[in-house]
Image (tube, rainbow over all chains, first blue to last red; front, side):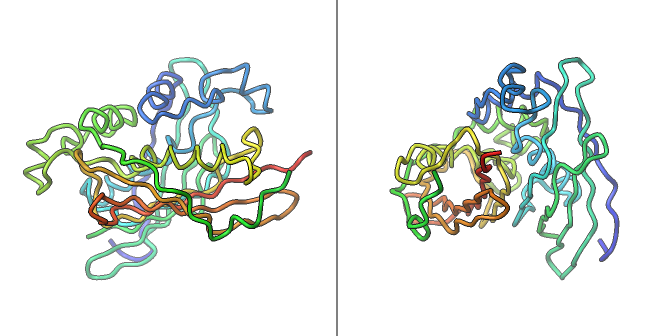
Length: 131
Length: 148
């Protein structure tokens, strides 16, 4: 990895079924992630993905780039926009990209971004990985 | 009702221990589509130097759910959960979480601020083993949207 290097971006498909599965796995049963009625009642365009689910997808991208599933030392994101997930098989896509911000002998710092429908959904996102 | 500023610096009573389960890690990894064998297969994890399967990077949030309820349910803090939106999340790891870990969660309110009619509360949750080993530190910033 070299400072300034743009890592190959990764795209993840998200469907309603994923949100149900993630709700069960994480214990977050907030109805805005499964009830269209509730999501609209609080002013959302529809059911949205858990922010932590989107962060988990970014985490997959980071471990892929790091080349090891246990190389993440620090990982933080800001949630900038919700990720609406339509109720059909194509769902929606979240694209995660990264630029290498700093490199030392044993670590690299990545500047991360995630977008959905061309809008930034994760920003000020950073990961420090062990090389 | 605004957030109670006297909570800044206050630590809540520890919650847990949360026993990290092999099956829960498998379920979580499956739910996020993380298919590395180290999350599923104890033999693969042992080959990588761990006693059992390890958890993907965002898994520690599951061990902080009790602390989240402490914040939400504290009547003196004044958090209107219907107006809460997740702002930031960050994890700092001393090592991966491993199946079999018992994690005690101690939550501290780091900061409460206000800007543009919205309030922001930042907390730090330390996940430690019963022996006192710090495993993961989790920072969370929630936005409490103002009336509009």
